[in-house]
Length: 435
Image (cartoon, rainbow, N blue to C red):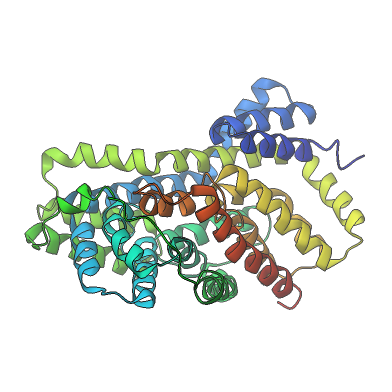
């Protein structure tokens, strides 16, 4: 019973239940934090003070999110992504594999090289639906391609959102007593990305390779139809700004600074007008603000869980219950990560919650830093594909369902869950035994 009555256990259970009941993630985390603190013997003022005091741990990450969201909004405002997407849709032709390959590459670039997130999907995908229908292309394959591009690159490649994710892993492992570097993370996380490639190939060439009939309904392509295909001065400046972001990231390994540099290039050279700056910042807050606040609260949540004293007790009880078996430990870690991420809907916000418990647990059981990295990365990423509340699934559905023939749960969430989460779990559990 010691494990079940531990304040950390109760808090995580409350968080999972509230998240799965679709309560807003911010409220769910706050309620779970207070519940864990009360069970741990803390009073309300102490809990709230510890919570807000822990915000600083993820303040840099939150700033990066806001600036990256602003840069993405600025790119969207210039129309560059839309023009490139429209040009590409015209030259793809009628070959299924070329189409699937193209949208996969674009999805990958949207997370790393030109970090516009999912803003390109309503422009690129709806005009392609008629062509997909003529090909009798199973849209579940397209959903898997888009989800892969939104997930695998940030797990493995330290650019754009990838740098953000790996910095979160690095900071939280370091804060919990296991110092690691970005290079260490990137050197093992490719295993997880490789497992996702296997899942993608199975989806495209086996599971969804057969033709699927769709009605020839008219999709809403107004967003794409309104886009001119002529590149103008502001578009070339935007491309230069994207290059600056990449260069600054390489030099400084600081995403906030690189996003700020890209924004300043667009402002100084007139791609964004001076009187539009407030709108761009507001758009950045709207796009990424919720995730930024999730990260701040997650940092405070972690501090409260540490202050209850329940972490150490739970680690000892967990080791005893697992019998020191690394296979069982790796399985439990990934399963809990899956549950938490499925509820929260963001792998980025899951890391601080899980790191408090799993870093000392991995250390006590005898996992190396490399094994701990891959388990934490997988535990955080698991559920992002497959979660109804995740951008990884909401984005593809927003485009593929433009004509009302693509179900969010059965045509996006279930296919991505099966083809990506299962390979991720297997890869993480097995790799952790040998790293």
